[in-house]
Length: 150
Image 1: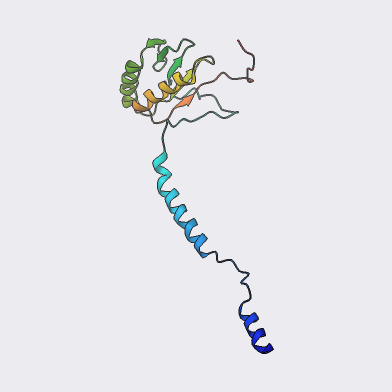
Image 2: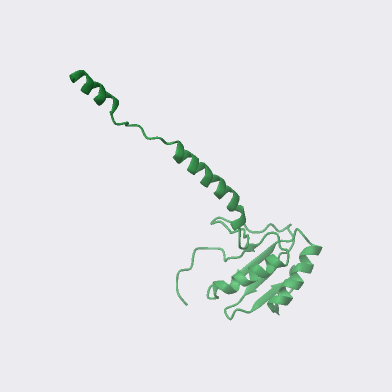
């Protein structure tokens, strides 16, 4: 009888291994889902943000198209060195679209007053994206960061 009890105890030993196969399957399914959905979530305006030590434009390059947003939220357009022109969003989009189609490699820069709403600058960037601008640069003043409040 004691031999029968020992055999029963040996058969009922708890298993100390974790079966990870189901976890690997779930991880692979999630990875495939994220790989498929990640490109579909791309939304917004692509911008080449300047780095800390950004170099100035080389003199031999074309004069850029410059769009400025002043403190009041007005748009100003300068096409390849021409004087600034006060312009509305629809006209901005139309003019820049025609100019970029004629000069596809011309740089396009956006400059916003530091007191202007971020939303106004984003509206300009969206209008330029709709105009077919492939790359967009942001302008800033050279020098150290200004932290004082006006």
